[in-house]
Length: 148
Image (cartoon, rainbow, N blue to C red; front, side):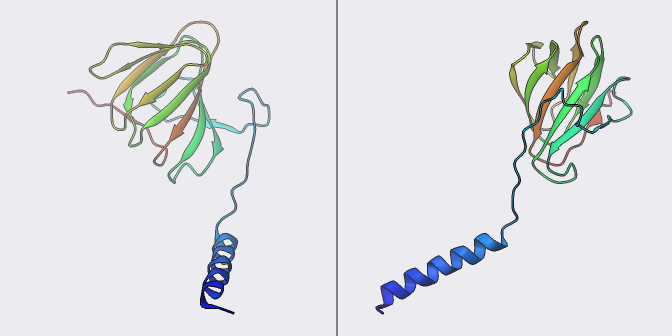
C-alpha cells in the first residue's frame, strides 16, 4: 500500500471517530399553538400573562430558541439582554422601540434583529396575544433597565 492510500485511510478513520464522538442533534418541528408546548413564567418585571416556552437548547447555554408570549394590550417594560435577538412575530401586532431609535411596528411574519445590551420597550396591541419566536446567541436573560 502506498503512503497516499495509507494517509487517506487514516483521514477517513479519524473523521469517523470524530463523527461518532460529536453530540447528536435532534430535529423538531412544532407549532406555537401546540398544546404539547411547556410554557413557563417570564421574569417578575414582565407583564401579567407573559410566558416563555423553550423550543431548542438549554436557556443557561448559548444558542437557545424560545417562544415569548404576552396578552393583547400588554406593555413590555424597558429591558435589555446580554445576547442579540433574532425574532419573528408569529401572532399579534407588536410595537417595539429600541433606545435612540424610532418605534418599529411588527406584524405577523415580520423579522427583527435586536442588538445585544440595547434597551427596548414594546407594546402588544389590543386583540390577540403577541407571540414571538426568538433565537438568542447567548444564554437567555432579561434585565429591567434602571433609569436615573
